[in-house]
Image (cartoon, rainbow, N blue to C red):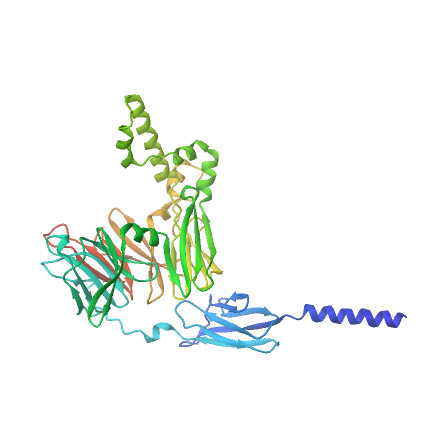
Length: 452
């Protein structure tokens, strides 16, 4: 009897041990194929359930798995993604070299001058521009916006196509979240494209329709389109993804400004003011409705001033830009001091702390209310060719680009833009493009580029 019980117990132990040890291990090291050095912060995961790991400083990773077949996917910003089959239910150890994407890029020519003019014609002024890969769309005009023209230049500055008649009074150019470029007039928006050296227009929509479709659309990656939505009077920001294949939406992340939310909880009257805020453009319309008392008018103006003061100083909308960097997404979560990385399916796989955006984190003082939010002075720009991110800081007309190390969250270097008050900055392939009109001389607005 004892022997029978012993056999049963031993059998159960073997059964449970087998069940508990049914998980096998995939481990290994990811390296840079060109140098052989370990590659830290690479995303390694299994396709079936997104189980994964981020490589260490030494490029090492370890993942447990229990089912096969499966596919091991290894990706890193600036490198070609590798996919490896996992067929047997055994422990695996891989040595995975990743090839840099930048190897196939054309050589960048560095000129002796720190800044150069991309387009110069004394008869024309540049109204707007958009980069389309290595090409540049330029919206130019002479004396009237109704006589605007559209030209397309290649990377060397040579003209590919030109359109000297445009439908409507030109307002500008706009690149949407799907990377399509539009010509926007006073009444309609048209998608533009080049075909055999000719600039063509298609898919017209009214301005209202255009704004409704694209105002909340941020970017796209593979089969997902990413949107934003503000909550709690702008004190929270939600990003969500629409899956075009499966026809469903998934929340990517919600960012909250907890400092502002806690402050408004302690001051409930502020929420009432924000909710009842009147647009200054509507005030004259309100006056025609029978406001005869100067006291009432004064109260309205005073309340409106306080509401706008609150919304522009204490309760500014959350600033947490979502950017596409190579095959991943990054949310620059300024309120929480993080850069949060997401894979193409919208799953967060890594985050890194940042503090360059903070000036004074002692938020107990009244002064701290203003100083703690220096991040509101920053915009984020991404070089989609070199996979670099920059924070643009402005102060007194001086514009400084700070290159962010995406692996550590620290600032690698700072580059001051040559001209003060530049307009519409875009970064591509190691250059900062911007519009500028010199104030000291009688010239038209031009498009410049500066080597970073």
